[in-house]
Amino acid sequence: MLNMLFVEGQHMKTVLCTTPNKYVVIDAAGAVKPQCCVDIVIRHRDVRSCHYGVIDKFRLQVSEQSQRKALGRKEVISTLLPSAKEQQKEEEEKRIKEHLTESLFFEQSFQPENRSVSSGPSLLTVFLGVVCIAALMLPTRGDVESLVPLYLHLSVNQKLVAAYILGLITMAILRT
Image (cartoon, rainbow, N blue to C red; front, side, top):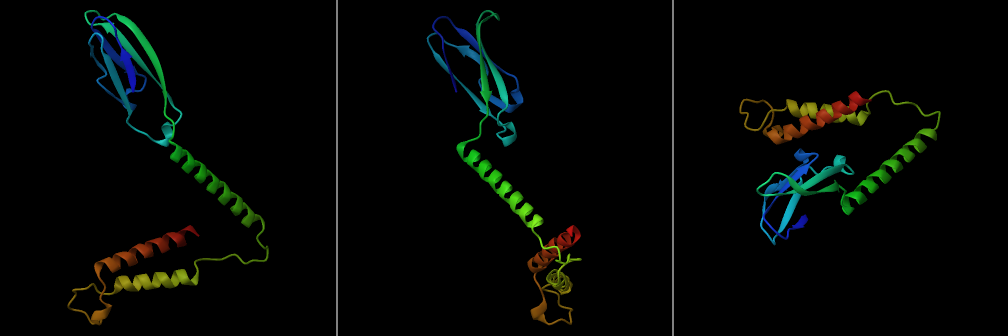
């Protein structure tokens, strides 16, 4: 928040910015009465980490109400900084990434040479996939014309979970 104080005569204030789409200025232009103080509120619209450290400039212009000629102006530089919590979070994420990179390097460099390379999905993955396919093939609750016992009829939610798990298994198999 910026504070401006004017001593004599009625003046006009104007706030200009290098990136107006990033900021909201409450009453960017208007009159200032004599012997009065005006608060100028500038809010950042899009606070994201990609905007941290970016320097923006504001120009505050004061002119006589009857004339357009500027009596004075002030350049204000603004830099968006992360909060203390966000800085701690970023440092923690950086430490975790470094730790994971180091441990991955350690595991890759010290693996036994005689270990056999897995050629395909594990038996558990295949079994889980078959169970999900079987669950999707079972009748849904409420189906009257079915030879399958009633306790094997699944709800729509149970089938959705089976389909989701089957999708995850498919992605895991395709990645290997």
